Image 1 (cartoon, rainbow, N blue to C red):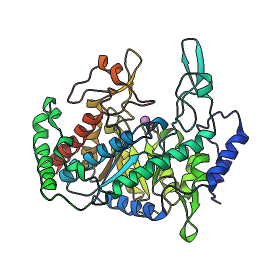
Image 2 (tube, rainbow, N blue to C red):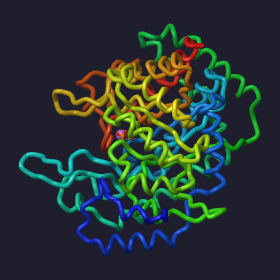
Image 3 (tube, protein in one colour):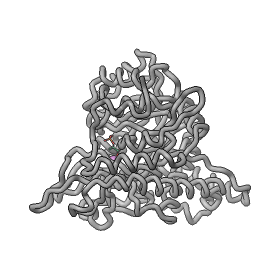
Image 4 (cartoon, rainbow, N blue to C red):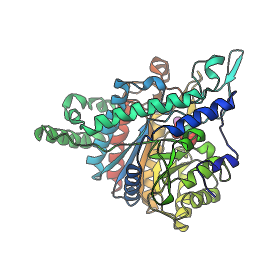
Length: 440
Ligand code: PEP
Ligand code: CO
């Protein structure tokens, strides 16, 4: 029988090497006593909207840091993250002519799966950084030792982040209509500038309209959160009973299972199958089709619309050979899913200097293939998933400003994976509009 802790009987991947397990137990018990971050009603509302997106009536925009850091829980950073997502959604709403569901990788995206247990620098070998919820990024033995107190710090900072997001979205983001926030002139440098022109002019017209009707009454902006449900002690401590004997993970609206923990017999799938949140599953090139089908069956046995989002992240070179068969298989099973494209995680590469990066053109190529393949298969691509930030970081190559390898070290800040910067993210939103108009 499922319980919030029934996962404890299953093999647990990615469990941090805590030296003090009683301290982990104590932190978990403390978390269990603390209030939830989100509500059942918000979660049910999101699930209905995701069902709409699967039917092509809405579009999901999911994005944010790869690894959110505790230090980023501050006014400027939260405001900037919210604004870039709202700007992208404004581009999309006008371009796609449908409501956008905004879901931030925020207020809890603090735990990271790692392919390598250890990291070595020069002669020293230390445990890998696993996200601020678990250990510190600094390369010294003290900070790399997993510390259960971080679960409580993470909970606290997630709740402060969400509190501020709620304050901002409740009072309306009226100032987004101000023209100075909308400098799209950088796209003129792009080789695709001609194609962007129409979209940019439509967005400009929409903003001008917003200004004309100003001062608009402050409107509530709907915003949801998501994170990878990796640290099951944290997730299950914040799992609470709801109506009709149901259980909800009240730490976030939309938890997902990452590629490294998508194990049918494992703890993460056991935990996720029992909660009533909508859940997402990352689908990578190594996941056999048959396993994918069984995972869908385990996660959505009642075949509820909106319950399951499949986030494919095959990589630009593999998507064409893998996605069509996945679409056919899921359809043949009569399994309702929302398809969402993550064009980031299959396109990570390392430069000759050893820096992890992604090329804008590879990301765009996977995105374009995603739209085209769903279109050709008479399927619906109902969302996109990006690692991005509003800051002018130099982590991904290319884009309108043509970042090159020698630029990467200038402003590389991500603690794990390279993100699109603010301009590259907006350009991606313009491209989504461009691509989907071409397919219509
Ligand atoms: C991520 O979204 O940061 C991530 C690790 O993704 P994936 O599980 O798809 O590799
Ligand atoms: Co990532």
